[in-house]
Length: 71
Image 1: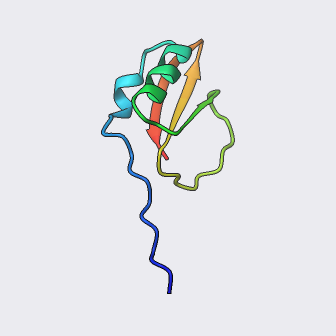
Image 2: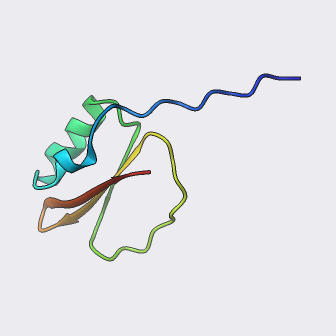
């Protein structure tokens, strides 16, 4: 029987620290800090809600991160 794979670890990083940053800078910073996927979304976007380890989501309003969350 094959071993159960270990899921990848998430960076030790708070999404709250990205709020207020301009979107391109926030995306670059998130990737530098180890987030494997960074998703920028407009306000009210319809998205899938499955949790993905290593993904950071940004709601971008007027070019700035208005909200950030994991998964």
